[in-house]
Image (cartoon, helix red, strand yellow):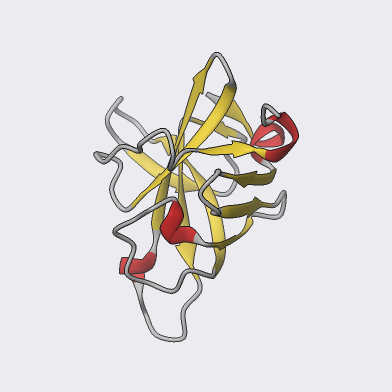
Length: 125
């Protein structure tokens, strides 16, 4: 589980993907194909993000602007046409290096170590 304050900031990976998560729920990314290789939309994206929050039974979740923590989130990409298939999911993971984000098209997918995004301020140098 990650708190919103911990999620907000700049994230990147060594392959060149860069993501900015803002307090006001704005989301922007460049080089996104370096984090989601099968992504078919533009490599520079902008949108909004929301945590997935439990809604009733343990397997029922809803995207929520009011949730301040979560294990996963959804990114709704702004597009000129309705391109919901450009939306991304983010899974938050924690290991001995701290938090990482795995961006995927479907939460059943996973990331390789090279695709994981790490917060820039905590990246090991």
